[in-house]
Length: 309
Image (tube, rainbow, N blue to C red; front, top):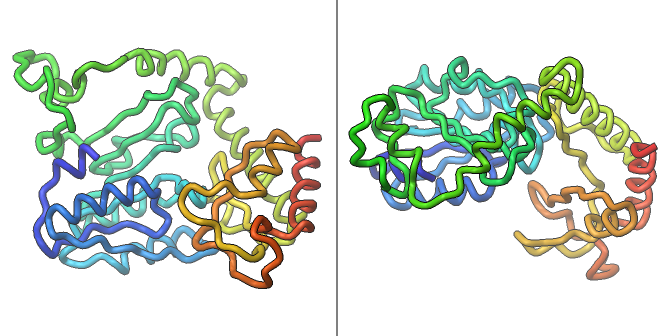
């Protein structure tokens, strides 16, 4: 939000995103557009996704001379796609468009060199795959863009006369009263998790990815569904499509799916059940509580039991 509140737009400018964007980030983009009379343009990605090039083509087809910013997840929350960020950032910069990356799942899941990537803005969480405490996160702004970006809370660093740090660091490093302990824990979290396997972080990331792919293949086989994207777009988590259920569409956005409850109650498994890109088709009305058929539950339960063996 600090980036979106700092940037200046004009009426008619276009802010580009995809239909896989995280809801909170999309809300922030809508808010920023409304403040300036700009317009949010949504690139619809193919689903299932046949290739990374199909994603690049879908995004670039929506770029116009009025496009000013592209907001994108590094790994999409709803669909667990590792998006082709390098190709997108490069192609958009060639067209004069900067990219704001929501990299909530990036650090610890994927090798990440922000200087090599070259995105204008990248924000990432350290409490997910790095296993640092909640509240540990970062905002990276490419050096040439830093002068225009200010924190939401203008605080002590604003009038600091220190010369050993950039103005960007002075503004962001101390914003009001906050607990710095989550950030202080990040180096230890990197060291501890990286020490879990002999090969360090490369082996940790490769092992997590291998498990995600194996689980996806097993679940798809048991459920009779197809993978939603090629393997090169899978990181440490994967999406599995469930068969369409019956009859009531779940009320968004705070909906607890009955399948979610059953997996937890019977197997003590926390699994994200997301009606995306839309709730299942309405068919025959059987019960207000029935979202998938009993056979669907049993098939998924059998597959999960096989994973746990």
